Image (cartoon, rainbow, N blue to C red; front, side, top):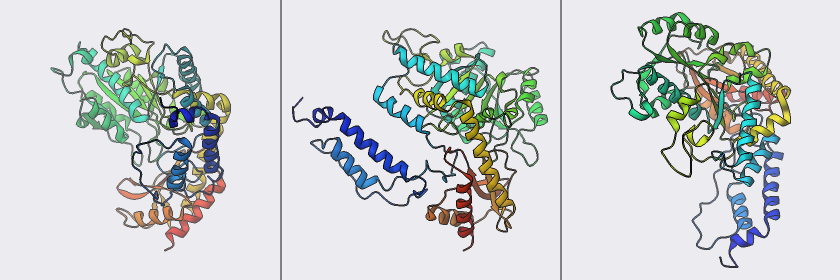
Length: 465
């Protein structure tokens, strides 16, 4: 390598370069409470690949000039779109070290990486109150976690028919029926990727005024299977209203009917952190697989989620690699053979740091504080002349609409645009029971009741036009 190579030059001044990156991170985070929640500025320039590298210092200078002021404040305390957490300080430390150590967490020959992931999974399992019968692995997000859980369910279903689907495919098998009351959109995507098709999902009626599945209707749907095995996707924290299926009652049905039970608890699983909300998850310990999204309410950086299952042998059947000397044979210890990825970063490390740093009490406080903030906004909405709640505020999500509207509302988009343009808060649109409305989700550890009041005033101003 040429002695004047920017790479060699950079290698000689790593401490300085890391300090520059730290300075930029501190600049961003120190202003995060005042940073516009959804920055509207456009990057000032576009770039082309240079023939001769500029070196990291100049690249960072160009980056901050072009993009530094355009990064949104989505990790700030008044970003209420989707279900977005904000990385805890400990999680940031863990994430930075993840890049420094650059371990392939699928490679169990990296003994430390394997131990770190096992430790993080064990702590998370303890936080959630799940038994050790659940094996867990980190994946990229709830979409992939649901995909893995349903892939294992598909393999279980094939086994019920005496077919190894991972080997022989779906030929000569009947249609797999998947039952769910209010599934997340990624369930459809997962079924598409699994070759089962979106139309394999049969929506089961929900309870009146609820998004929780009607157990009588679910029982009827199971009876209609006439003893044929199927899959049920239960929902623990629906994104619109944080409604929970009665998982314990579904488990009772599981004793009478032959189905695989997958629980999508992407963010609702963290109800387990609080004694007040944990009963909502009663029975989930008897599920076959569970989805939990750590880059939501656990407040670790994107991308990070965990898939839990009791059927690790079926998991190996689905995701094992073909014979490759450098990977070793299929087994339940190597992550090479357990998820779609053969390579991934050590996603477990930010979770390990954050769980060790803040413990069960810290996460109880985050969950209960988020719920208190949602309750405050819900109270303001219920008492206002402009808005109405679309559903009770059960935990950390508030769905609402303009007060005198009963259907499609052309006011929603302009209102949300004005709110976004104010830079004070960010909400997303929603539709609930055919009424167009708005939705605020609280899952950031930084958010306080004062932030709710700032956002509320911005909402009143945006509505009063």
